[in-house]
Amino acid sequence: MAKNDELYYFAQNGSNALKVYCAVELFKRNDKRFLELYKYYSENPLIMVYKMGCVGSQKNIAEFLRDEVYSAKEIIGMRDRFLKEKR
Image 1 (tube, rainbow, N blue to C red):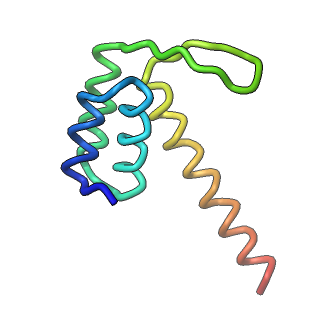
Image 2 (cartoon, helix red, strand yellow; image 1 turned 60 degrees about the vertical axis):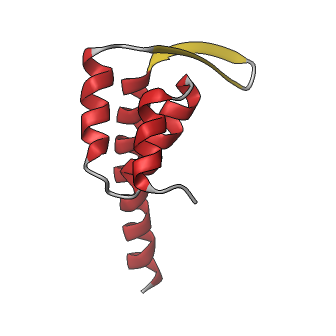
Image 3 (tube, rainbow, N blue to C red; image 1 turned 180 degrees about the vertical axis):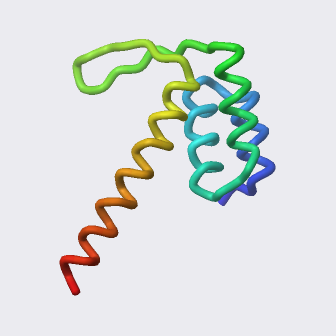
């Protein structure tokens, strides 16, 4: 398992996909350096080409990171609703 410092290094210096995966993992670990990475990629756009199924697209790495933050809120909300219904 990678340490946060290693993840931060790869989020700055790895391949485009590795940058996204490492930054997302830092977010999940509540590492404040995630905000530095988001700010950096927002100010210095780095476009990543990706395929989801048979559809190809391009996005700035900052967009992937923003999507992760928004989806986390949604997942937490669904979890809370599920726990309320279960009671």
